[in-house]
Image 1 (cartoon, rainbow, N blue to C red):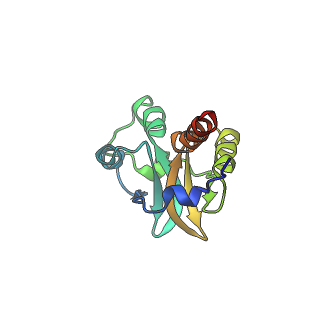
Image 2 (cartoon, rainbow, N blue to C red):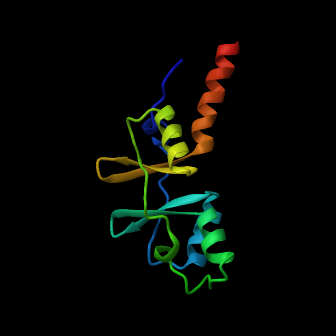
Length: 134
C-alpha cells in the first residue's frame, strides 16, 4: 500500500485564499465561483485562518449577522491545524479527526501552498482499497 504525501495532492492545484478584510458576502461569492467549501485566510502574506461554508452558516447566517458588514476576520477559524507537504494522507486524516475539521491548509515552510479536504484524503484510501481488491 502506498503512502501518498499531502504535498503530492496539492501539487499543480490552484491555491485559493481570501483577505481577512473581505466581507462575508464577497468571500462566499469567491468560494461559490470556485466550487470550494473552505479557503485560507491571509493577513498580508501570512496565513491567519480558514473560512468554511460551515463557519459562514453557523457564525453568520444562523446568528443573523449582516453578510456585507461582517468581515472574514470576525468569523474565521483562527486556531489552525495545518498539514505539511511531506505529511502522509493518513497523517492528514488523523489531524482532521483530532481537530474535528474537514479541511487542512497545507504549508511548506511558512508559506501556504494549498488546501486538502477530508474527501481528498478519503479518496486515496478508497482508490488503494479498490486496487487491493483487484
